[in-house]
Length: 547
Picture (spheres, one colour):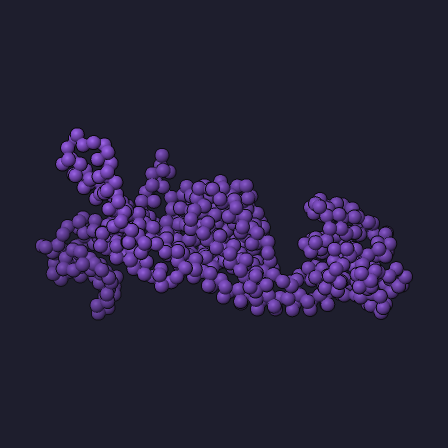
């Protein structure tokens, strides 16, 4: 946090005042101050640590006693204290703003707490505005899903920024700060960048590589467009995260392969059907419980637009139909199960029945399926106990798959996704370096502004001197010509330095040279002596909030 010199170095002030109150003029005293050196570092001297600063010298002995001795040539305590305060403020205000993520996810936080923290998409702009009104928050974004609530900010001070955001989260959710701190995670700069890239790539999801999170990251950018506070750093971070998510899925194909029993059931059925029949195959789902609903969802995701669902009651089927608009879901009671099976090419079973629903005698007389769908009726049984008796597999025109068959598919796919996740980490590491390089390139922007302002001050001052010498009766046309001449000279002189301060961060060598040029110009033109950018921002926010 950038602070004014009136309260920077408070701990040092307390230390000096305490020491001066017990100071003794006696040469034998264990406390002494001298003005012989400048404070630039701590160094050990025979079991002591000594800090040296303009006009003041501290010695901390092994017994932790601080001693002070006045010197005839030493400056006053007040003067020395002001120097120390200024030094602390200078170091503090030169701190670079930080990207911070304060998050609570399914990995660290119970659902009861995540529900209270959740922010609807329509409220994201409001949340961004409130966050950016905090004294030490410059930019912000909200990523709120069923599995995570993460707030990304550009903080002018890491410590105070995190404190303010945590207090805001507590205020808006009603959850005590102590509970939030118990479950939250904090990541800064490169770690925060890598985390978002992993989230976008699906590496932080419950189902490794799932694609829904990438769509949610895209939505953050879409909602943030035009919102004050969704600034250059945060928008750049999320846009880069979208690039990472796309690249990981393209180069590693991490999303391929089912990793749940229900998705594996659908995937296996489609693998066994001729590809040309995927759109026309007649699907029957028996059971509309949790697993049955997931099977229906995965069928819809694979492009199925019509299916029959057999269940004891219609209530659950109606709820699923309402949720999946645009899909024709036909309800049939359990009493019509065999009739429905006779009209189906693929039968998924997922009921809690303790006895088989299909035995050999039930299936043998069912009409044969079309050769267009392979000529074989498929039973995919994901129930335990099994809904399809093992004897059904003896029939020539039937193929039966149960949970054990699906587990092999799931296990193989999970192992494959873990291998792909390692490949994805290499992509993320590469993209993280590119993003950090781009962000480093933004460091030159304040120098460019300060150099232009410095040149403009000189130009205006010299122009006024020149015009005053030329008299008050100077024609406007001549004045305009002289003004244009001075601007042209300044712009041409600045062209070279400005070109060497611009860099998109794509080339590490060019970036390094650009930063060296920036530091050189800061030294040559004493640009660093101006009020630090972070301090200016904090002062402006404090003044705004005090109005």
